[in-house]
Image: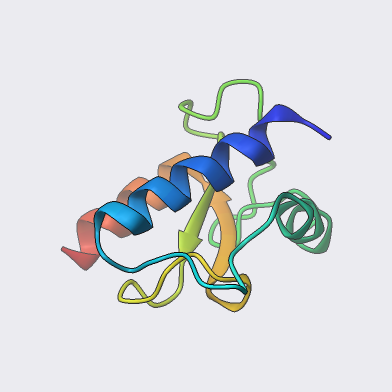
Length: 94
């Protein structure tokens, strides 16, 4: 298993705990992240660019986004998108 999945899950748990959303039983897992990556054919859900995990801070870096921002990173509330689209979407939501 790659390190990127573990880092994403750990960071998401920290963010959800800090914001009071909690960490329920159906929380996102490393296995689910890999499944989403395969399901999406390693493409951003918004722009279809191929994403990379070597440096996820770059514009084509793989990131995770929640569908409903008032809910935690649970299995049914997450999909993958590139850093560029995730950043743009965050600006639009606020």
